[in-house]
Image (tube, rainbow, N blue to C red):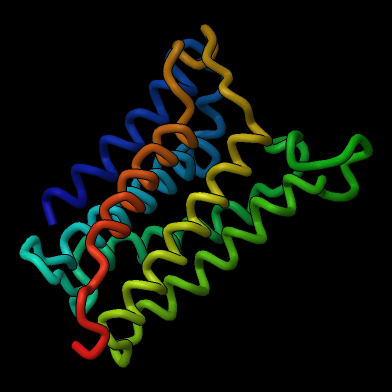
Length: 197
């Protein structure tokens, strides 16, 4: 539990530093906009650590039937992330997600939410316990791929934005994508060797 709380604290602190230290005017957006950024990154990384934790390191590794503490932390993080994101889904917060008139979302903005929704559905399915190890592995792989796609489209919309107003720190979507990519690499090399187990 301490590690999970530590991860969420570090990610939210990173968000506060990136968006407020050199742009104090953003402090009024701390409750949702800024906290949500750190919260979502922590949720994504929790899933990565959850998949690490669920796999045995020996040959013929299998995914555990019961979700790990890290995986549950990712689920709880997602449950909070979704309504926080929807609450501020407007051009004033995410102009990059909308077309010029701000009345409708752009193609890339819609792709962010499409793959976010698919990821949430996959996460829900992973909380079920009736999967065989090979099916759970495949669903885990699909979940990480959709999460990576969700974060990638976020990056396409938002860009790198490494400048003084962001404390010259890497964007949170990029750090999340690197973490998810590492999780995908681990999943691919940890495929169960026996389809019947």
